[in-house]
Length: 218
Ligand SMILES: Nc1ncnc2c1ncn2[C@@H]1O[C@H](COP(=O)(O)OP(=O)(O)O)[C@@H](O)[C@H]1O
Ligand SMILES: Nc1ccn([C@H]2C[C@H](O)[C@@H](COP(=O)(O)OP(=O)(O)O)O2)c(=O)n1
Image (cartoon, rainbow, N blue to C red):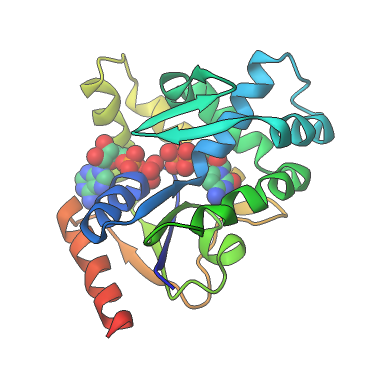
């Protein structure tokens, strides 16, 4: 099975590294965080009570979601920029704790493996819940101060006014929420390879994952 899962906390570099690994191997990417962000977008735009897990799960189950050429379309609207907003990420982290929503997104995520040459699954529970049989599971971590630096630079490069201390506090809150929820908490699978990228460049991380994959596939 051509499948690599890459899980880890916010701003550890999962999205960047997943795309580069998939490009090198000619595979597709499942950006599972985008599905939780889309769910948050639905809550925010359809006037749904953020505490109402059942309604959120029902509405999300019916959404028409398309990923194409770097764009994300929900019910015919291009939403990529809205999804990346911090407010969407915060709401995503909150509602991702609902078992009803996680169940509603389960098959949608597993279906990504069908009909593709291979898949890199990027998220929090790719190796523990969604693809427990994946031949290679990576858990990508980095020191929280380094992650705050990366997020700060990312926002400033996009022309967004950013405050380092706020970003750091937000990451710490999000780590706490993602790691301590009852269902599918962020944690390495027992058979995951842990990569600490605090002092590694992006290409070094990509190369070490490709090396792990080469070991598995020979
Ligand atoms: N090893 C690394 N060294 C320095 N910067 C990195 C590294 N990995 C990722 N980045 C940068 O950190 C930022 C956050 O990465 P991203 O892929 O969005 O993280 P995640 O998907 O885990 O939230 C991006 O601007 C990315 O270019
Ligand atoms: N497989 C996943 C992916 C994301 N989530 C939740 C938890 C995260 O805080 C939000 C947003 O995820 P996303 O990967 O887009 O966030 P970051 O880019 O890492 O900040 O969704 C999840 O619970 N399970």
